[in-house]
Length: 446
Ligand code: NI
Image 1 (tube, helix red, strand yellow):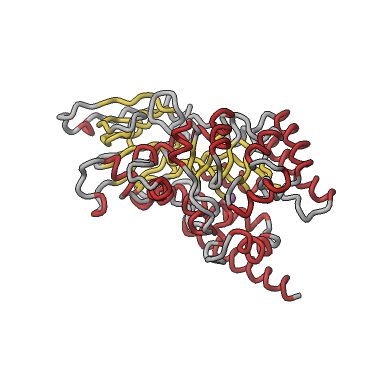
Image 2 (cartoon, rainbow, N blue to C red):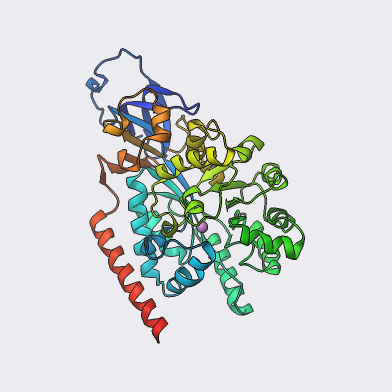
């Protein structure tokens, strides 16, 4: 057995307390072997000699946390970061995003996903969920980067002929089937209809059954904007998540992005079904979609995870920003400064997201996946230390992350990326983005 000893740090426990401990990782199994608590007065624990099969990662002066989970994104939209801003969702998609997405090539997707992986590793995110196109390219990035992910092909059928629509639905099922368990089990998959309004009712009913036969969960956008919920209410006389549940789209293991405009019945349905909500506070604020009632959902027993959404509506993939935003807007929504406290925000960024995606991560305890990040606590904005849980929720930034570990492998050591060439990835992504916009402009003017 090869052991990675994450030594001499302070460790965030599953109960969200802090203790001095070494975290021992079984590198072959990718699991946490033990958390060795140290007495408060112990000195120079680094004196212990490394044994031949033990490698040490220095966490002194640092805080060891579960790797953050970005449970809803469209990673390759890094290429569209800053391409179009300051518009509501429908106009932003129709006027800017969909035209340029029509010109995306598999190589573009790979370049964008690589950039996303660099950004996530740098900011201590170890697992993500991605809904986009050309899933094999995203899977290749996950494989190489060492991250963990639940991937799927996003389906849109509105405005398409039946043959094209069915081809898109089939692609989503095919990639879900082919890639589930890939990258040594780090890749899981889902069937991903884009939303309840962009995929036709008949298609949803027909294809969700096929996803169940494959044993993969379903992930989609739901109740994101008021303008998106009202057509379902008008046409079907029922709330969107009731509509979803009646069509078999709300079962344990399923997860919906946003759930901004939900009523009490829908919150109860989420809790009863075991389906999870992925809260995307920055994207919901930027597109003026609204604020999801996170405290009410937590009170009702709904599993809530956290997502950046695509980097074109955020505009970054730093889950620490999202964690803080979740606490801030949760208080605004509730009109109560005690709503979504630090512990709740940290919980949804770690264990909540891991639970939503079905990963045995998000808590530092023996037997769990060794998906971890180590924060350097020396920055001025983390000084002084009264309460590290407070710092984690309200003051820490992705740039404070010193080491990132996923599945027992070190992906970033002392701020140097191990699995990806950061400079080459950034240059390639910038080149692909420039070329993509040029091709889009040519297509629009011809
Ligand atoms: Ni989204």
